[in-house]
Image (cartoon, rainbow, N blue to C red):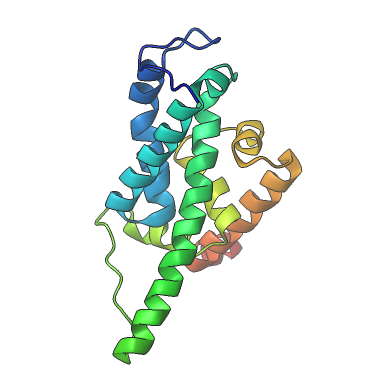
Length: 173
């Protein structure tokens, strides 16, 4: 398979180099919101950009190649979370005690920690909506599901976050 050069222009008129420069930070931020680990987030974003580069002849022609890259990040973050859980359980059994998890310092650390406790799809939908400011239709495109499904994930994710953060009690008053 022939790989495109960094300056190869896709059907959309955008070079891969320009795409990568524009999308890198948002991809890292999205990955961090799902994993809570900046190193992992950077790796996931790099993996998504590498996958886009290898398929740039096809991906570059999409209306929204960034949505394709976000789907790669979402899928790989889900796989990372599953692997991490298995590794922690195994290490916990070996050590006879649970392992500690390091969290990235942030002003709204509690929100992001609670977001990572949501189901994978709820966390992905909420992160894309609030971090990336994507519409329901755009989130559906990124996650490869129906708009109604996105609405359900957002509704349930928001409700779970409100409960976890104690905001549902303020609403009831």
